[in-house]
Amino acid sequence: MTISREDIEKVAVLARIRVDEEQVSALEKDLGNILDLVDQLSAADTDSVEPMAHPLNAVQRLRPDVVTETNQREAFQAIAPATENGLYLVPRVIE
Amino acid sequence: MQWDIVIGLEIHVQLATRTKIFSGSSTAYGAEPNTQANAVDLAMPGTLPVPNEQAFRYAVMFGLAVNAEIERRSVFERKNYFYPDLPKGYQTTQLERPIVGPGYVDIDLANGETRRVRIHHAHLEEDAGKSLHEDFHGMTGIDLNRAGTPLIEVVTEPDMSNAAEAVACARKLHGIVTSLGICDGDMSQGSMRFDVNISLKPKGSEILGTRTETKNLNSFRFMEQAIAHEVERQMDILEDGGTIVQETRLYNGDRDQSRSMRTKEEANDYRYFPCPDLLPVEIDDAFIDEARNSLPELPDARKARFMEQYGLNDYDAGLLASDAKLATFFETTAERGKDAKLASNWVQGEFSARLNAEEKSVADSPISGAQLGDLVVRIADNTISSAGAKKVFEALWSGENDNVDAIIDARGLKQVSDSGELEKMVEEVLASMPDQVAQYQQESDPKKRKKMLGGFMGPLMKASKGQGNPKLFNEILVKKLGG
Image (tube, rainbow over all chains, first blue to last red; front, side):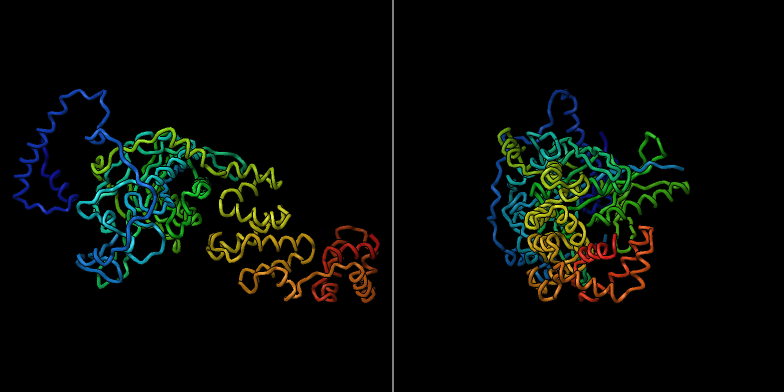
């Protein structure tokens, strides 16, 4: 299993990570090795195995529909870079 | 060229739980921005989601109402994408094992036929926050109160072939979720959001064309317009030899225009994987049975009951039963008014027309079912004419007065139905119009005679200051004029 430069560039865009030109070659090798390692799993016959949803053999606990949280906006907005009128401000998003 | 239109729907239904799907934050609408967005909703490090049992109960109720299989073991996945109103960088949703499996709804078509629309599945997921694009010094404002609100996304098979069928299906699902009480159904506030997938193929062809998805349809009217608009757009492209690009389009109902929002190619790479923060959720038969036992009356059953109990016809019963709030309003009106047919006419006529004209929902109506019922009583017992009733309705609607009888008195709308009094007026008017009386009596064509009767009504209404009962006037006239 190999990974192409285009794959790396695409993944970088999706993950919003800037990858310099010289880093791509190194990542090509590193990620290729990881994929080769993982690829060995495909040698196992999994035809009759249900895909695992979680490593713990347990079932999710559910919560009753009761309000337990209080308004802590001030505390959360104290660590935000920019706020106004109770809103978090972010660089302009244009659809 | 002749084309087949293929339409499928994706519907986001906001569940009417008190708290969010993965946290104990309130979901109440209209709170100050970000006052209901807490550590879990904001994706603070170290927090863990705990699913809301009520969201599962509601999803199961929906599944049962659309004749679907309920998945006993459902799994949450992460759908990864970046957007500022999604603090975690992924939406927690269900992909491989949704809670509601294949089902169906039957919709009534205008020609009286029934069409079955299959439900592919429905899954639980969380809503995102809201981006406010007004100018905050060149920045975008984010309100995360909605982030984490539970949704079910209902996905239909592409079983609809025109706008009317798609709207009928949408209305049906709206009626089901509001009847179940799992959603308030308020489309203008985004409680129910419809996306329409549309493609065209040459008539009779087995191969589906490329589809587009149209979003942002916050009323049934816009939905119908948007479908017509998109079908025409695709038809123009195809007939000019072009190809359809798979994309998401935003529809602007006020301008009847749509524009491309994004092409799917890149945005579609969501890199789903099972959410490691959540274990699989298992639901047992007892949970499902309890949900089944709590199912209220659904639109189909209600329609049958309206026909039986109130003697309404198929069309009227279907329309009134389709929406839970409208149905309740009608029943209040009918029981108070004691005349179901008249109640049905007023609820579907004047009342619905006013709601539509003012883009209000039944819940926002300034008048109650009981008030309309009181009005129906006064129409049925001939206290007021239908013209007078419209005036009373206006006064109720504008809030001038909330009591039907008080309005009738204040406005002098009471009809004179005392036959002695009316008879005297008829005699006086006839005496003052000897030529017309003679003409009438010489006329043998019943149609012309009927028309000539109308000529006496104007002076009679004038003589009675508009308060004479028109029906009684008519009867007396016929009698006095001799048949």
